[in-house]
Amino acid sequence: MTDREPLPAQWVDVPAPGLGVMPAAVVQPPGAGPSPVVLLLHGTHGFAQQYVQLAQDLARGGLLAVAAGWFSGGSGAGSRFVTPIACPDAPPMPEVWSPEAMQIVETLIAAARALPGARPDRVALFGQSRGARASLHYILGGGDVRAAILNSGGYPSEVVDRVTQIKTPILLLHGTADSPADGGSEFTDVRRARAFESAARGAGRPVEAVYYEGGGHNGLFASPAQYEDELRRMADFLRCHLLA
Image 1 (tube, rainbow, N blue to C red):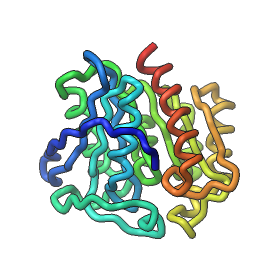
Image 2 (spheres, rainbow, N blue to C red; image 1 turned 45 degrees about the vertical axis):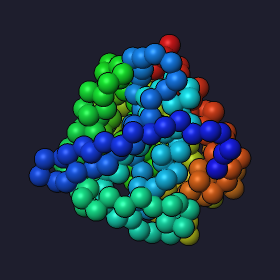
Image 3 (cartoon, helix red, strand yellow; image 1 turned 90 degrees about the vertical axis):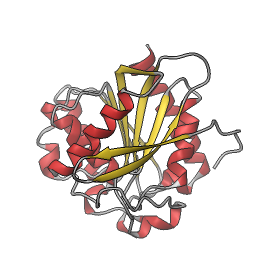
Image 4 (cartoon, rainbow, N blue to C red; image 1 turned 60 degrees about the vertical axis):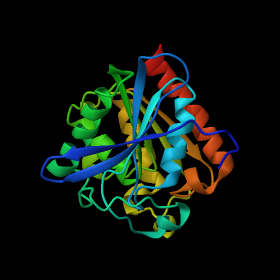
């Protein structure tokens, strides 16, 4: 995706009691810590090298970045955009609103807070597709993070109806051509994303949104230009809410 020299990633295993063991790539930023933390949750296509690279690129901005294989396997049309990393011992793919999904997210956040060099009071979430929906459900349930980035998320009407519960600042990134053809669903249609943004703004919730004209569900990984623009916007957003 880029020609930047990658920062080293340290691999750790994070056990989720009763569910499985999740691999995670931990990338420390340059310089002395402690540093704010961003946890990356992959989409339905599964854990992949692209998430490790994204963690490496975000770490350059002063963040301790953690890319985690939060469920095993992967499927769907979006699989062709990523290079998979096997995590057979991770939990099975959960429904995004399920207690199991929330337990997994909470377990990973707790592990990230406890990492050497982490600032436990400054943690953010990034989610792609299914990971974005899990992140949104986590903050709707009162999850304790300072910011959330929702990339190609899904916005069913029951989520839109709950926007008044949002307190966490959100950066919404979405392609205007998101569709099932490249890994999306009826809930990731750009009209759903715009409806969510409109409802959130109308309720006075802290949301920023960027729409990529012609971008698909996996535009972050399919388009180098979109990747660079998203990376810049993510870094600015996280710097504002974690480093300020």
